[in-house]
Image (tube, rainbow, N blue to C red; front, side):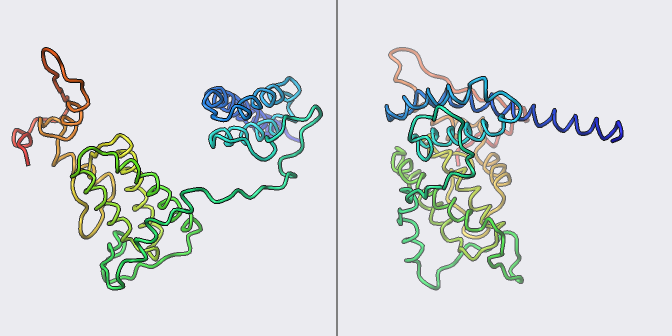
Length: 290
């Protein structure tokens, strides 16, 4: 074996070792943060013996680091779901751990969002001649149809999951007008047929993710301050730029200023001040209310 080949092999082994060490530190930090938040006392008590087992000196040897990290990754995912299942139902064995690949996978029951039919029933109830949102990636002369992209089904499931998450937060938004706008956006996104191409489904999910991020704060911002377009959906960055031009943060009438003032306690004396700073030149016409 030449010297260069030996050096390359040494670099690859060292790189893998560093990656496993980084993974180990990440899972350790995640477990420390997640453990106090576990709602089930028995599950919380079972984390400590598993951590003691996996953080033991015997699992720091080179040949067992990958196996250790796989168990830590599985334990972390279980803790994120606030439930210890599978091999973590019992305390760890006193002897060596089984290979995770040899343990049969327990099929989990459907999650609540998978059983929720609110929006799927809405889509099914749409009339046959309803107007779909046209594809932003195909012109009117070309035909947009579902492609064979392997992530298509996951994109659809992701969309239903986001709608399930959006609904309870949207109901808590204090402004009736904002709740109406959220409903209009959801209906518009639902008008995207499942027969659309994967690029259009990805754009739909981008909007759903952004909308979810805002309704969690019980407010609307960016392109969601207005009703959705009747026709084409532009890319999310372009929609954000257009919204920033129409609703500048430096305007005293913007949604950000209203949200900030409404969130403050009523002062016994004095007043609150909203200051927005921008690096752009001030357009005096942009501060006028719409």
